[in-house]
Image 1 (tube, helix red, strand yellow):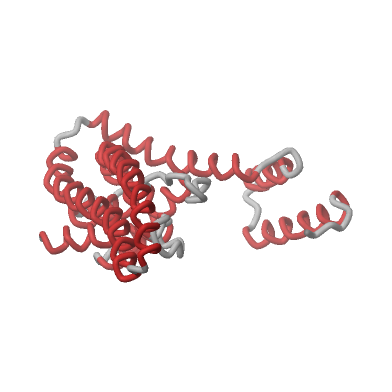
Image 2: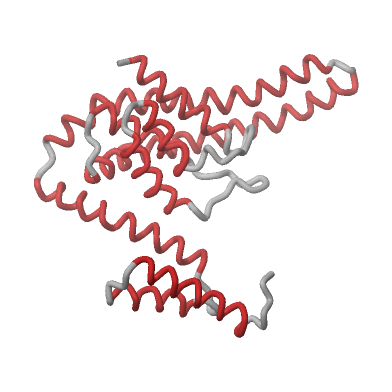
Length: 248
C-alpha cells in the first residue's frame, strides 16, 4: 500500500510543479490532474468527477506573473487518491476528504511562500555564476529551486494521503446521520457554487440575457439539440445586430 501512497504523492508533485515552476502545460489544472491520478489508480470516473467539481471552484485562478496560485492541484490529486485507496468514492465521502485536506492546503501554501522567498535569493547567486562563467553550476542552481517546489508537494502529499487512508474510513463510519445529511447537501451545493463562479467570470451587462434565456429554456425542458441550435442563432444575431457585425 505504501507504494500507492508514494505514487500518489509523486503524481501530485509532478503535476503541481507544472503550475509555475516548469512547463505550464496546464496539467496542473484539477480537470486534468484529477483524471490522471484516477486513471493511474484504476478509477477514472472518480478522477473526472473530482476534477470537474474543483475546476469549477478554481477556474478563475490562473498562475499569471508573480501570483501564487491556490493549491488546487494538491486538493484535486490527493482527494482522488484518498477516495480511491479507501474505496470511499461517493459524493459525501469526497466532501469529507476535501474537508480533511483543508489544513494541508494551508500548510502547503505556507511552505510555498517560504520556498519562493528562498528561491528569490538564488538569483543573486545566479548572477555571480554568470559573471564567473560557471554555467554548469548555474544549471544545478536552477534545478535546486525546482527541487524545492517538488519536494514540498511530495512530502506534504505523502503525509496527507497516508493519514487520510487510515483516518477517513473510521471517521466516516462513526459519523452521526445528521452529518451524513450535511455532507450530501454539501455535495449538491458544491457544483452550484462552481457554476456561480463561472457565471461571475463570464456574465456582464451585455450578455446577462443569455443566462436568463438559458434558464427559461431549461424550465421548459427544451431538447438539448434544440437548445444548442437556439444558442447558436442567438449568438449570431447578437454579433450581427447588437455588436454591429464586430466579430473580434
